[in-house]
Image (cartoon, rainbow, N blue to C red; front, side, top):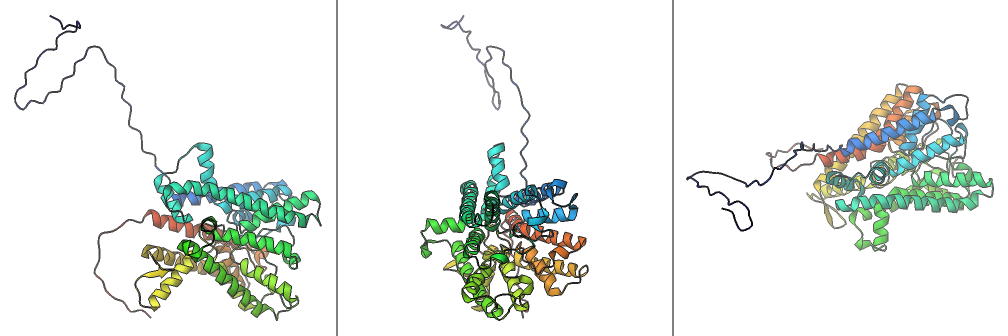
Length: 482
């Protein structure tokens, strides 16, 4: 007997109590294929990825700069000189053991410029952007959150857009800077040379690298009276040192102070304060020095004083012979170099936000308050701890590197300390001892530049990555302070 549609009648089954039977009618043979479960992709720790990315760029740059046709001298420049130059370019420092204008060919200078550009934008933008567009790789949520911590971005979905805009803004400002410098340089150079000079110095200035093509390790001293060149390079250096998020927030709020974020207000207020303090200090200490500002007229003193107050954080250009300044000027310059520029910018140092958080923490402690407040907003205590960690470890590294250099060099301790702080802050200013450093000292300074560029950022990434809330609380006990 069949059903009306000629299908066989389903057999009836009787179930006993507690039976658990699952039956499925099979009318025809079915084939199933089972796939092994996918392995979960392991994402590289952002801090480690940052270090490996910069190290890879440095290694590639070192190999290329060792090629005989990269330098003007006969044969290769050697491993340590190439490594030092590559590290200084990638870490946008500007310290050099070989004069950029005379020791390298056009090819070598182009390699240095590319390393500056990649290092300035940073592995977190350049390399990540390259992966996104060329490999179709998507950043994980954790990577976006941690990346946002270093760039001032809030939501993880905004981070990739921020990276794209950083690249566009960087290239646009560098192009504008080169276009403004070109009409000035074409007056004294051939067309091709003037174009290359303009592009090179615009990229170097915005990325706070400090590399120059003037020659004889003189930086911009031959142009100390040239308002056109000094002003353009100074403005590019300041824009690069404050960072994209500060510029975007300033433009987005149309400069209305109350609408700006606390991060933006910290950077702008501190930058303005350092600009004024540095300007007043250099005039007070160097106006009577005939080897620096003493022999210049007042308009030139004012211009070069303002330029000086801009460059130690951390462009490395100078219109004043640093090996001729007074000791108090050198010491004050070290303080500016150690602080550096804004977080997420091309500048180095411990960063303005780090310094300002500690400054407001000191104010809170002086007022016997447990909350750190800046511009009417309470700062998370975890940020204060990170700022304190970065500052103390930075001091420890500078002290260790300077002490190590004293074993291999006969320069004064002030000269060695200045060189160490300049390397750690990725500034590039020097009292004239860089070309005379021995092989071991070059390696020490190279490591200091590398850690100075990546150390604070990698440390913040690592701390953010391992930051997990703990429910356990311990009994409190006081210790003696002071």
